[in-house]
Image (cartoon, rainbow, N blue to C red; front, side, top):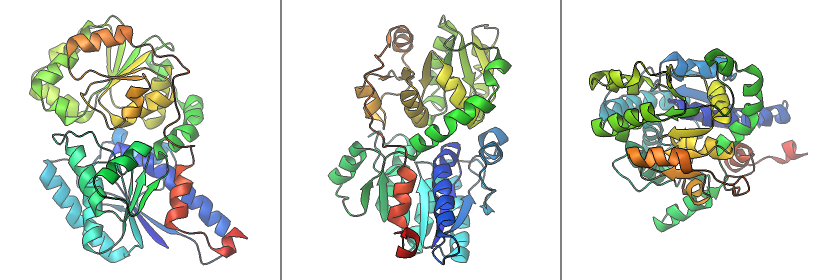
Length: 372
């Protein structure tokens, strides 16, 4: 069987890793049989900065992509169209049995659309998520990708319910969250390898950690200014790995003064996945507009303050570990002081850490030769 994986942005790299590991384990068990999986990795080039892209391949042992489409940044429509055209050429050359796409990025939609038009089955990992805010480009990507997919791999029961309400019940599978797989496998490695705390002179639980990159904040001058202003006003030291897109917008909007001359605000370049896990695990609290970081905070038992008014991960809010505050300065400040969930209020809603194996068993039914 030939499986083609489309990735292109930082969250995609995290999600594909456990799938590649599951394929490697499957092939090892298959031995010399003809049932081995041929895996093709396609990188669209949506993220191209070293800290946002190549470092994943270097640090996590990901094999180099078989194809790098080199699309780069640009307006949403242009970027998606370029990915679609270049992905189509790869699919025509490779003719995979299934194309696997991850999450909700432009790479996700482009890969799914290119495959679907060539009548190649699409598997969507992280299907069924909804924020119900169509102003988010990610929400559009999710909805369209789900409609194009043959296999809808849902991380939570809520995601399955969302698809059912939209009339999608065929090919829907509740498998758990591959990001949970990745975290369980990499947190110990991160604690051994990462030197980020020493590099930044940070002590565990002595700082806040923040990330800002969603268009609803970076493309809204009022939201971005509010968030940066309150970051400066917080009493706790705050570490902010600054996404290249966010930095560009700050410069365009002439807001750099809000990041300067403040000893409590530590602005750093983007860090690797392993360094970010260590920063998350040792933070006092996390402030973010990232969906992935919301979940990682939950699994690591770190209170999370989400700089959005809705989330595709409502389980984290219902459990009391995540609070939605938008870009409201007062709500952000109050939540930093107030949010203090009890450790026992952390229900397991994201699988058992073996989602990648479950997905592979559905995509590639194991033959009797391998089973015996």
